[in-house]
Image (cartoon, rainbow, N blue to C red; front, side):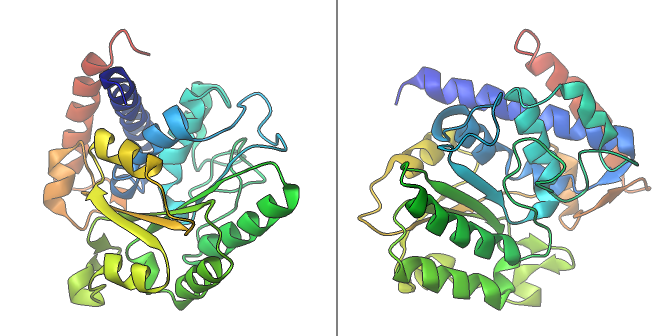
Length: 281
């Protein structure tokens, strides 16, 4: 891969983060930290990997993307706006009455969203169904699904994982946002996940564990041969990445105005990011 490819996706990730912060700061609350942690992988997916048509979101030969951790919707909405699925001005209606951008992703509301998600674990199973449909469609479609590490505490995820491996869906890529945190705190304190790489590999998957904010590693992981197996890319990420105060707070799963300094830090981050992406937007 060329350095330009990496630079292009890095620029896109900065734009995605800026839009996430702007829309949720305008709203006053929302799932900011868990959206920031997946901005890099979405930039790579939509910038270089996925096959889609923003002018025809239901195109019959498109690749499927499922955001099983549906609360990361702000990251997906920002990405879709940047890719031309709708006007970016619409993002400021997020979670308001009549919006097409609810707190969790909804395929009936938002152009470009392939699956309604939010009940954790279910999106993974939906993605398994889409993988089966893609084979029947016979157009070489691929399926990509993002799950959270806390979400993998749901047994339904492992049922889907076993079925996908059994069916030999080599066109399926699972992406794990492994940021070590969930709603109520650190995974290790709530329900230790142990080695996700070994566990998923034991289910018959080709697994990789990489830096989830390193675009060169992310691109390489998507391009790596899965050896006729479904592929699982475990991204080691930081919740709130891009806003140091949010990563410092750690458990800031849901942003709401308060005295913890998050609002001020986000406002400062927005101004900094605007300068960074000047000339790009």
